[in-house]
Every structure is written in structure tokens, then in C-alpha cells.
Amino acid sequence: MLKKFNMEDRKPVSTSMITSCKLSKEDNSPPIDQTLYRSMIGVLLYLIASKPDILQAVCMVARFQASSKQTHVTAVKWIFRYLKGTIDYGLWYPKGKYFTLIAYSDANWEGCVDDRKITSGGAFFLGDNLVSWHSK
Image (cartoon, rainbow, N blue to C red; front, side, top):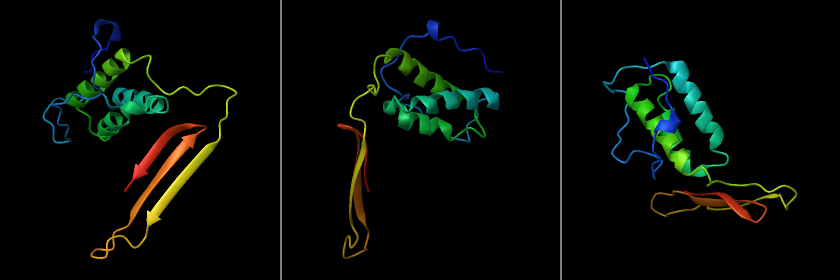
């Protein structure tokens, strides 16, 4: 059974994921309440819009919603502790400012002559601010 998690009793941490954590569905720790775990993941997914620094950690723990164990909950709690310490960080979208989405992309369709792999990339701006980019 999962105990109630009280954030007031926990110290903030400086990283969004436990560095020595190796999450796996083959974990031997005890199973936990799936409904509570999914609701915790839902809260974190909602926060990604303004806190993109937690994206990778949240995606890592979200993989285990079907068979979550105590170690997975520990990793989620670690993310919440990170959020407690970074409450003033995030993306802020000012009201009434230039707010147009602009996207740039490019691709090399011929790629490498040996294996014909494609190289592509893109950048996405909201107003004057870079909000996302990719390179593959």
C-alpha cells in the first residue's frame, strides 16, 4: 500500500531524476495502487507545458503505468521534490505580447551516400522565444 506523500516534509533536490536509478518493469519491489500512480503521472504531464526540464524524467516514469512498482513511485516522488526546489523556474507566456508560432525545418533527403539515411531538423518559436527544436 502506498503511503500519503507529504511534500512539506521533504527536502528539494537539484536533479529531476535519481542518477543511479535503473527503472525496469521486471522490478522485484512491491506493486502499488495503479490509480494513484496514474494520477501522479497525469499531474506531471500537465506540468510539462511550463516546465520542459522535467520532460525526459516524466516520460521515463510514465512508461510504467500498467505495472508500476514501489521503485517507480520513488522516482516520481523524486521529480516532485525537484519541482519543489525549482518552483520559480519555467516558461512564462506573457499576456498581450507578440504570440505567433513560427516553425523552421530542413532535411537532407539524400543523406549519406552509403546508407541513404535522412538528416532533418527543426526549430519552433513562440513569438521571439525558442520553445522546441529537434535534430535527427
